[in-house]
Amino acid sequence: MKRMGLWIRVGAAMVVSLARAFGRRLRKGPTLPSWTWAEELFVAVYRAALTTASRDLELLAPRGRGLQLPLRRDLRRRLAVSIEDLGGVRAERYHPLGEPWGTILYFHGGGFVTGSPGLERQVAAERACTLGCDTWNVSYRLAPRHPFPAALDDAVT
Image (tube, rainbow, N blue to C red):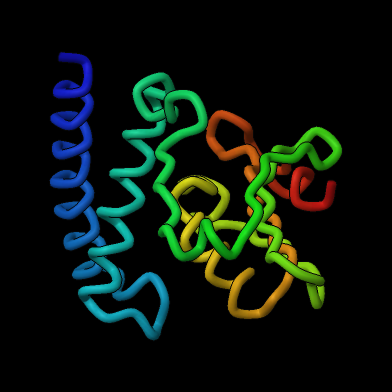
Protein backbone atom coordinates (compact mmCIF):
# COMPACT_ATOMS: atom_id res chain seq x y z
CA MET A 1 0.00 0.00 0.00
CA LYS A 2 2.88 2.36 0.80
CA ARG A 3 4.37 1.78 -2.63
CA MET A 4 1.09 2.66 -4.34
CA GLY A 5 1.00 5.97 -2.46
CA LEU A 6 4.58 6.66 -3.52
CA TRP A 7 3.76 6.08 -7.20
CA ILE A 8 0.69 8.30 -6.97
CA ARG A 9 2.80 11.12 -5.47
CA VAL A 10 5.49 10.63 -8.12
CA GLY A 11 2.90 10.71 -10.93
CA ALA A 12 1.29 13.87 -9.55
CA ALA A 13 4.69 15.57 -9.24
CA MET A 14 5.49 14.67 -12.84
CA VAL A 15 2.25 16.18 -14.13
CA VAL A 16 2.75 19.37 -12.10
CA SER A 17 6.38 19.72 -13.25
CA LEU A 18 5.32 19.22 -16.86
CA ALA A 19 2.83 22.07 -16.60
CA ARG A 20 5.35 24.34 -14.84
CA ALA A 21 8.10 23.62 -17.37
CA PHE A 22 5.72 24.27 -20.25
CA GLY A 23 4.65 27.63 -18.77
CA ARG A 24 8.20 28.64 -17.89
CA ARG A 25 9.42 27.81 -21.38
CA LEU A 26 6.67 29.94 -22.95
CA ARG A 27 7.45 32.91 -20.69
CA LYS A 28 11.26 32.82 -20.47
CA GLY A 29 12.48 30.60 -23.28
CA PRO A 30 14.66 27.51 -22.98
CA THR A 31 16.64 26.80 -19.81
CA LEU A 32 19.72 26.23 -21.98
CA PRO A 33 19.91 27.79 -25.45
CA SER A 34 20.44 24.43 -27.15
CA TRP A 35 17.49 22.62 -25.48
CA THR A 36 14.53 21.56 -27.56
CA TRP A 37 11.00 21.36 -26.16
CA ALA A 38 11.38 17.62 -25.67
CA GLU A 39 14.62 18.00 -23.71
CA GLU A 40 13.18 20.77 -21.57
CA LEU A 41 10.08 18.79 -20.63
CA PHE A 42 11.98 15.53 -20.15
CA VAL A 43 14.44 17.10 -17.71
CA ALA A 44 11.64 18.74 -15.71
CA VAL A 45 9.63 15.51 -15.43
CA TYR A 46 12.69 13.38 -14.67
CA ARG A 47 13.89 15.72 -11.92
CA ALA A 48 10.43 15.83 -10.35
CA ALA A 49 10.12 12.05 -10.38
CA LEU A 50 13.53 11.48 -8.83
CA THR A 51 13.11 14.22 -6.23
CA THR A 52 9.70 12.98 -5.13
CA ALA A 53 10.69 9.32 -5.10
CA SER A 54 13.89 9.98 -3.16
CA ARG A 55 11.96 11.34 -0.19
CA ASP A 56 10.95 7.82 0.83
CA LEU A 57 14.33 6.12 1.13
CA GLU A 58 13.03 2.97 2.81
CA LEU A 59 10.84 2.11 -0.17
CA LEU A 60 13.61 2.81 -2.68
CA ALA A 61 16.45 1.10 -0.84
CA PRO A 62 17.55 -2.20 -2.36
CA ARG A 63 16.97 -5.22 -0.16
CA GLY A 64 20.17 -6.95 0.91
CA ARG A 65 22.65 -6.59 -1.93
CA GLY A 66 20.01 -5.55 -4.43
CA LEU A 67 19.05 -7.40 -7.56
CA GLN A 68 21.60 -10.04 -8.53
CA LEU A 69 21.43 -11.24 -12.11
CA PRO A 70 23.00 -14.66 -12.69
CA LEU A 71 26.06 -15.05 -14.90
CA ARG A 72 25.81 -17.09 -18.06
CA ARG A 73 27.12 -20.65 -17.82
CA ASP A 74 29.96 -20.05 -20.31
CA LEU A 75 31.21 -17.09 -18.26
CA ARG A 76 31.08 -19.08 -15.02
CA ARG A 77 33.27 -21.75 -16.62
CA ARG A 78 35.87 -19.20 -17.78
CA LEU A 79 36.04 -17.11 -14.58
CA ALA A 80 36.66 -17.47 -10.88
CA VAL A 81 34.12 -15.20 -9.15
CA SER A 82 34.58 -14.04 -5.57
CA ILE A 83 33.38 -11.26 -3.29
CA GLU A 84 36.24 -9.19 -1.93
CA ASP A 85 36.71 -6.31 0.49
CA LEU A 86 38.71 -3.43 -0.97
CA GLY A 87 39.49 -1.26 2.04
CA GLY A 88 35.93 -1.40 3.35
CA VAL A 89 34.27 -1.28 -0.08
CA ARG A 90 32.66 -4.50 -1.33
CA ALA A 91 33.48 -5.65 -4.85
CA GLU A 92 32.91 -8.72 -6.97
CA ARG A 93 36.12 -10.00 -8.53
CA TYR A 94 36.06 -11.76 -11.89
CA HIS A 95 39.38 -13.55 -12.33
CA PRO A 96 39.92 -15.18 -15.73
CA LEU A 97 41.45 -18.63 -15.66
CA GLY A 98 45.11 -18.31 -16.53
CA GLU A 99 47.39 -15.31 -16.10
CA PRO A 100 45.53 -11.96 -16.26
CA TRP A 101 46.84 -9.23 -18.58
CA GLY A 102 45.85 -6.38 -16.32
CA THR A 103 43.19 -5.05 -14.00
CA ILE A 104 39.89 -3.29 -14.66
CA LEU A 105 38.10 -1.33 -11.96
CA TYR A 106 34.44 -1.34 -13.08
CA PHE A 107 31.96 1.19 -11.65
CA HIS A 108 28.36 0.56 -12.67
CA GLY A 109 26.41 3.42 -14.22
CA GLY A 110 23.64 5.39 -12.55
CA GLY A 111 25.19 8.73 -11.68
CA PHE A 112 26.00 7.64 -8.10
CA VAL A 113 22.23 7.44 -7.46
CA THR A 114 20.91 4.22 -9.02
CA GLY A 115 22.12 0.84 -10.19
CA SER A 116 24.08 -1.94 -8.55
CA PRO A 117 26.93 -4.31 -9.32
CA GLY A 118 24.38 -7.12 -9.47
CA LEU A 119 22.78 -5.52 -12.51
CA GLU A 120 26.15 -5.08 -14.25
CA ARG A 121 27.59 -8.53 -13.50
CA GLN A 122 27.21 -9.73 -17.08
CA VAL A 123 29.00 -6.70 -18.55
CA ALA A 124 31.89 -6.83 -16.08
CA ALA A 125 32.31 -10.60 -16.52
CA GLU A 126 32.28 -10.33 -20.32
CA ARG A 127 34.98 -7.66 -20.17
CA ALA A 128 37.07 -9.87 -17.89
CA CYS A 129 36.79 -12.78 -20.35
CA THR A 130 37.26 -10.77 -23.52
CA LEU A 131 40.23 -8.74 -22.31
CA GLY A 132 41.75 -11.39 -20.05
CA CYS A 133 41.92 -8.94 -17.15
CA ASP A 134 41.07 -9.18 -13.47
CA THR A 135 37.87 -7.16 -13.17
CA TRP A 136 36.58 -5.65 -9.93
CA ASN A 137 32.87 -4.71 -10.00
CA VAL A 138 32.69 -2.13 -7.20
CA SER A 139 29.66 -1.68 -4.94
CA TYR A 140 29.85 1.99 -3.97
CA ARG A 141 27.38 3.79 -1.71
CA LEU A 142 24.50 5.56 -3.47
CA ALA A 143 22.82 8.92 -2.93
CA PRO A 144 20.51 10.13 -1.46
CA ARG A 145 21.02 7.74 1.46
CA HIS A 146 24.77 8.44 1.34
CA PRO A 147 25.14 12.02 0.06
CA PHE A 148 28.06 13.38 -1.91
CA PRO A 149 31.03 12.66 -1.58
CA ALA A 150 30.35 9.11 -0.25
CA ALA A 151 30.36 7.42 -3.67
CA LEU A 152 33.44 9.37 -4.72
CA ASP A 153 35.20 8.39 -1.48
CA ASP A 154 34.39 4.72 -2.16
CA ALA A 155 35.75 5.05 -5.69
CA VAL A 156 39.00 6.58 -4.47
CA THR A 157 39.33 3.95 -1.71
